[in-house]
Image (cartoon, rainbow, N blue to C red; front, side, top):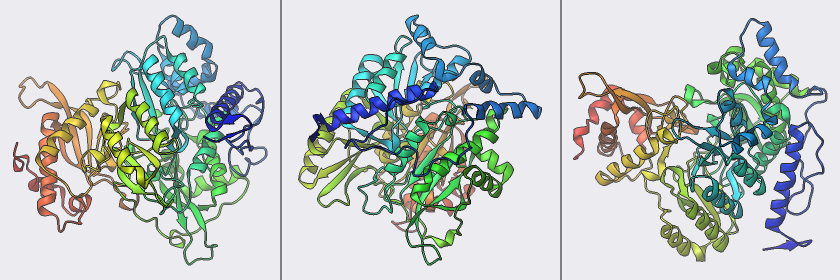
Length: 610
C-alpha cells in the first residue's frame, strides 16, 4: 500500500469522501464550500466537466428553476401532482432534523414524507417489509474493497445482513428499522458514499462500462466521465427535484454493454469513419430511453467530444426540469417531452441553454458500435494489461450476504488491488488478478458459496426485488427466478447465453422488455377455482434486446400462474435447441424469425419431461 505525505491511499480516499460529503452538505443549504477537493495524489479535481455552464443560465437561487416550472404549469391551467406540492412545501434537503426526531421516536414516515425521504435514498417499503430500503450510489459502479467491507458492517449493525446488486450497477441495503436510517446515512458518509438523490425525483446512479480502463476492446474509458457527472450532480442544487427520476449512462464501446440505450441520456462511444470529421473518438448523444414504456434512447445526430459530455448532459437535464410535466406523473419522463416536441426542437433548446451550437453528423459518419460479449460479465477473462485478468462472479439474483461481502473485499485485496466493479447484470467483477493467482481466486469464490462459471441460465438471470421488498410487486420475483433456474437446469443444458428477466410490476426495474425471455408479474385467474380467485403469475415475452440487437419483446404467453412458468420456459428453450438453424443461432434470432402463433405451437410445455 503506497503512502505519501503521511497518508495511505485508503486514508486519502476516505478524507476525499469526507471532504466532498461536507461540501455537498453545505451546498444543499446554500452555503459556500469550505475548501477545494483533491484526488488521491493530492491534485485538485475539476468537478462537472471541462466547461462550466454558460453565464446567466442559473438564477441566484437555483431552486427557482423548479418553482418557476411549477408556476407555469399552474398558470396554464394545470394542477400540480401531489409530489410536486410536497417538494414545494417542504424542501427535502432540509429534513435532517425531522428525520432524526422520527428515528428517535422509532417511527416511520407517513403521507408525502414517505416520498420526500426517498431523496436520501431511503424507501419505506411497507407493506412488503415494515422497514427502509437504502439505495446507494457509486459513480460508474466502481467501489473499493474497504467500502464493501464497511457496507458489510453497516448491513450487520443496522440492516438485514446482506445487500442486493441492482440493474443500475448499484447496491441496496434492506430491512433498516425505524430507529436506524440516520445511522446508515452517517455510516455511508464515513465510507465516502454520497447517496443524497439516490431516490425520488432525481438523477439516479450514473452508470458506465464496467471494464473501463481494463478492456482491450473499448474505444475510451468511461469511469472518469461517470465520476465527473456524479460530482457535477452532487454540487448543483438545481439538478435535484426533477419532474421524475432520470438516468444517465456512458458506454465505451467495449466488451460489456452499459445498456446506455435504456437511459434518459445515453452516451455511446463511436469512432469517426470516412467523413469530414477528425478521426478520433466521439460520443453519440441519445435521448429518451425508458424500456418500461417500450422505448429506447434514440440518436439526436449530435456528436460530442468527451470533454463536452457532462456540460451537455446538465443542459439536457435543465431543459427537462423546465419543461417536464409537473401535473401527470405517468407522463413526467423525458420521453414524453421528446414525443411532444420532437428531437429537433429539444436539441435547439439544449443549444440555447448552452449558448452555442452542437456538432451534428449523420450516423453513417461513424463506425457502428461492435456487439458486446453477452457473457463477459461472468467468468475469467484477460484484461488489456498483459498477464492480468478480471473475474465475474455469478450472484444468486444479485444478493450477497455481509460475510460474502467481506470475503469479496478480502479476495480483491489479497490477489487484486482492492478494485471492485458492479454491473447492470446484477453481479460484480474483481479485476487485476494475475495469471498465477486465477486458480486460487476461483477456489476462494467457490468457498464462499458463489460461482464464477458462465452457466447459461443463472449467468443471465435478472430479477427485481419483488414482493419480498416492494409494495408494487405482484410476485416474489427473486424466489421465483431461482426456482425457475433450478427447474430448467435439471432438464436441459444450453450452449448459447440466454437472458431471463423477471420484473414484479409495470415499473419494470428488471427491464423485462429487453430480455431474451421477459416475465412481468401479474395476478392471474386460478384455473382450478370456480370462484375466480387469483394466483401469483406472469405474462411471458420473447425476443427483446439492446444495442445492436435492440428490440422490444413480444408477448408469447399471457396470464401464466407461476407453477406453469418453468414448464413453459423449459419447453421454449427445448424448442430452440431442437429447431434452430445451427448451433450458432442465438435464442433471440430463433424467436424473432417465428410468428407468435408458430412459436407457441413449437413449445408446448408437454414437450419437456416433468
